[in-house]
Image (tube, rainbow, N blue to C red; front, side, top):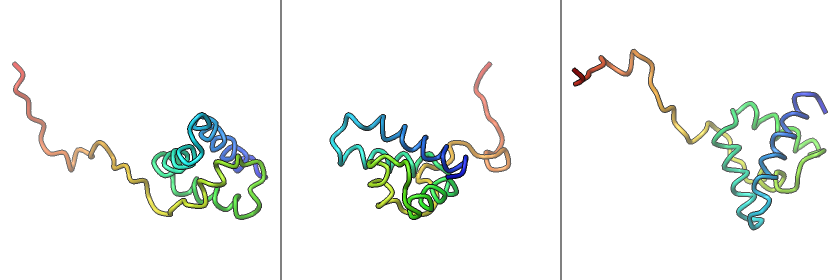
Length: 94
């Protein structure tokens, strides 16, 4: 396992450990949702590739979460726009 893959596996296992106190279905769903919301498509892709290659070192909750992991971008949109899209700033202060 490469150093990068080892780090991704460790991070994914930490997420699963956070959700471990929850019932199994909730732990799996919480882990999956975290991977979708906060990991880049490349990170998810690398973790999926590791899973498909045998999943060495992955927590069973992570393995279960990966089985339902969709592709694509995060469902969380960017909170801010660049200045070209924000328009002029207006203020009613002072």
